[in-house]
Length: 113
Picture: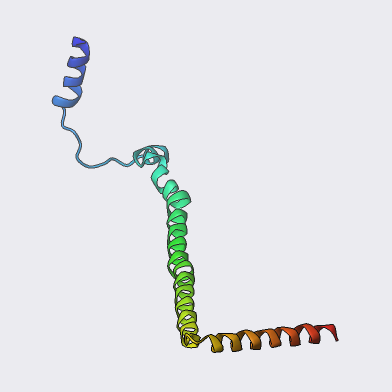
């Protein structure tokens, strides 16, 4: 252990540590940049993943939310239209049923010919 301390002291305390990075070969440069694993992971996994997240968010915002809001507006409009036909008079309701029955009968008879 003492030998290790003496060697470390001789290497790092007695000599000045260079402040400028020395030129080296390709393998040393790759090792200094962690074998470019961050760059590769970013290109292979992170960027496509970000694209998928953006696409999913846009699909949710414009397609899903749009369909739900459109369905809600359509249902509300149908409710308003139905409310106009409701008068509270039984004679009106009987007339609507008679008209519907006549239309259904015409459709069935037209389909037979």
